[in-house]
Image (spheres, helix red, strand yellow):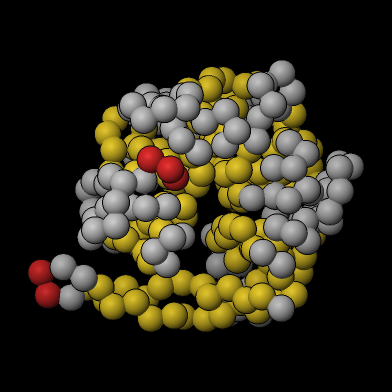
Length: 245
């Protein structure tokens, strides 16, 4: 049995040099390698249960509510999914093993699959919705792509393998700020790339390393209610906080 410790209660310390983090709740169920989390406006927590190929939904108090999907390749089924987000009243899942983007309503009813056919053997691992665009990271091809939900058509892909701006070395999670700017963990480059809402590079956050303020294996991203960017480092077992880059 696996469990997920959910939430950080952040208390600013003197000069905002550090914070005290306290666990708020533990989400516990028969999860097997949960890979991502999304929170609905009503506080329900959608946990992507990777190996089990499903989404497990918890109430805002941490009680299990319901689950949907199952492992497989048929419509409405998932294969080793890695990313989830909620936007425009729908749940979008990076169905990594199939590969495609699966779309459900918030009750868990299957809506459709967004096919990534025609791409260069894509491997979608994270998703985000912003201003009518569905953004997804393609780990295999080291790039960031956008799908126009209004036109129901692919829009663009940017990036290739490398260390320069707008190049990636295994991009992973995506977060957006209040202005629609995109933040993407660039895992093996040890940084977070910040991009304009239309995908153009703006600047980097952090650099590769083990010292304070550096990142070794950045993966997860989230923004606090106060605008702090929280970056999970899977190698260090820590969360690093950044403000305004």
